[in-house]
Length: 376
Figure 1 (cartoon, helix red, strand yellow):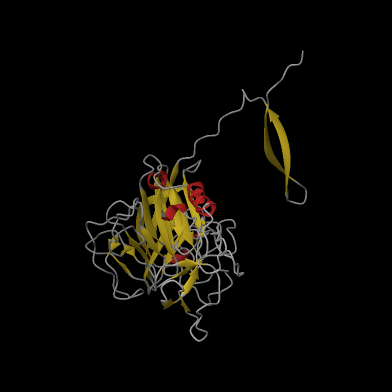
Figure 2: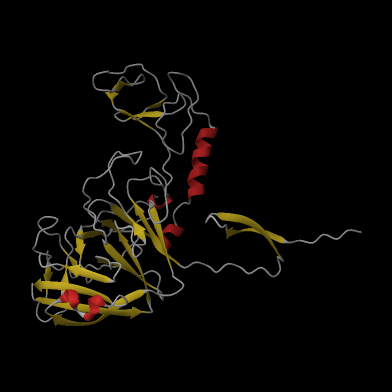
């Protein structure tokens, strides 16, 4: 009689001498295999303007969205003490690579240094244009209409260290956003021309050049019932203010007492060149998954919709293709009718087309599936 032994075969990788990864099959007794630890998710940051991926693909820290989850070891910081110095660049806090600090330069020989100490109760995540190691989520300028990623920006308006988010490890629902991020030396410098203030003996604070704007939704974001709130600006210290007269004006806005820098499900973050959407873990749990969206499109295509002009079957793609395809559906924006690709009724001067069904003249665009679950 033969006995059958059940084993759990899973795939692991080992590094080759050339630096690539080699797949290895390892056998483990299924009874002794440990369950993976559950990830505590704070939320997701999604760059608006993309359909679940960047035009040239998501690579490393540069992607269309970024998941914030509880770190194995906390790396958050909190304000400790502040003092006045004459030469900030040569002060001990600035020179110490292990010390987080913010330097507020008031004049050539007068600056305020604010030291930060480790905070075991928070995790810190930094967002910006820089590809240096302190940045967790690399964000570049969003170019409207760029579907290939080949359009380059001569001068970006996004800060290299744009902002930082501190998430509460004991209460994962609380995530606070602050303007500016710490550089490789764990410093933040606000120069002499930067907007800063210290009123009535309060703690010193300031704004970055182009600012970090936030807009909290009014109402529940899930279900589409939320209404737009008001754009506000968050400071380096986490204060919330009304907008300046212009994006980089020297005069700060008014303090908004009833507003907070705590991110809500559906909060928009404007980095002056790219806009991010914050989705909380609780909100994402109520939203459809990517598989749910793919299932919907499969059901539509299974119905074999037909072009009323060419009488050919239309197929809604999951990704936009630059190539012309007879099965690609197009929508007439003025009337909403959907048809396949054909040359009937085309105005060669304007590029508009006349709808064969209602004879409405207007632009047409390709129909494709929106596959970013965070936007649902």
